[in-house]
Each structure stands twice: as C-alpha cells, then as structure tokens.
Image (cartoon, rainbow, N blue to C red; front, side, top):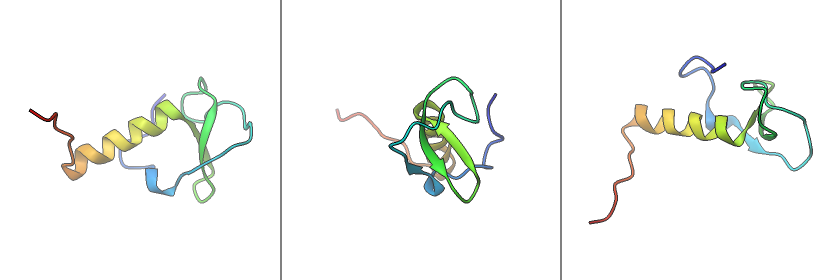
Length: 66
C-alpha cells in the first residue's frame, strides 16, 4: 500500500531510535521515521519514496557529474 501523492510531507518526519514495530504504510519494514503531527510511522524505504516524490514535484534532480 502506498499513500496518495502529496498527502504526507517528508519534512514532518523525524528519525526514531526506539523499536516501534512495522511501518504504517507498507507494514513490512521496521519503523525508522515518525510524524507526531500526522500520527504516522514509516520505514526507510517509504521515507525515501516520499523524498523522491517531493524532489520530482519540485523539479529537484541530481545529475551525475560528467
């Protein structure tokens, strides 16, 4: 399961160091980030997906050096 694009903001998440179980979005990976405001916990893979989605919307792309 994936959240709707634009619903979760990666900037609202902070890294956690305690074991909170599995992520709320995919229910597969170990929780690494949590948003207290949205009451959502996500794994590293889901967090990376949020960042990529945001970068794509904002036109931010990393280009390889030639």
